[in-house]
Image 1 (tube, rainbow, N blue to C red):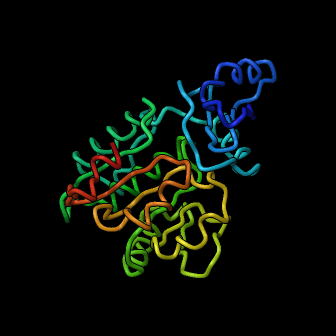
Image 2: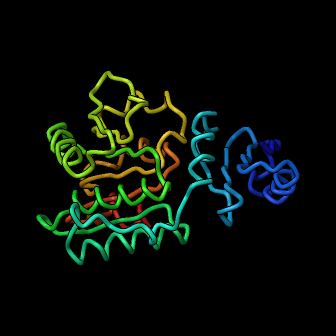
Length: 244
């Protein structure tokens, strides 16, 4: 941790911190000034990025373990049993290419009935097999959709345990995929480390990830993927602006 006084913009200390990290053979850097915190995986990222706070020890250890075994995403075959259509494969390959280039926010627009859930499941499986992700948060805006997603994932991703987090419950650390509504998350997410999830998927992201609910997505430091058939662009809501 490179700590500076509040009048110093934290990222300006990045090179100083990298020098110390190289000497100590430490993979991760936090830059802090009492007002903001920045995180830097300096061996794999060109620049630090701002996070909500420091990560828990267990999450840092999990990230290190994954990084030592990580494989090229495009070298992992797509499970055609889950997503067998050419356009689904092109979508997954494009997402993986952008992640390898360093992008952390992604938006997928697919028409209703073309298999968004199947595409997401095959994408998640590829990330797990490449050790690019070990925990996923899948957000929906209604509990009925959460139950439908759980049924689909149990069919498509039977080897990756998932569960529906209901209001008033705690995270199940033993499960790899957490499926829940934004409403169930809003009162508990700050009890966890910002590094708890590696991938956050927002289904029907044109509807409910803005305003009071946006804090959930902004809190966790993971790759963010929005899924929608109808992107929303208004004065107050913009999928393209949010996901870049």
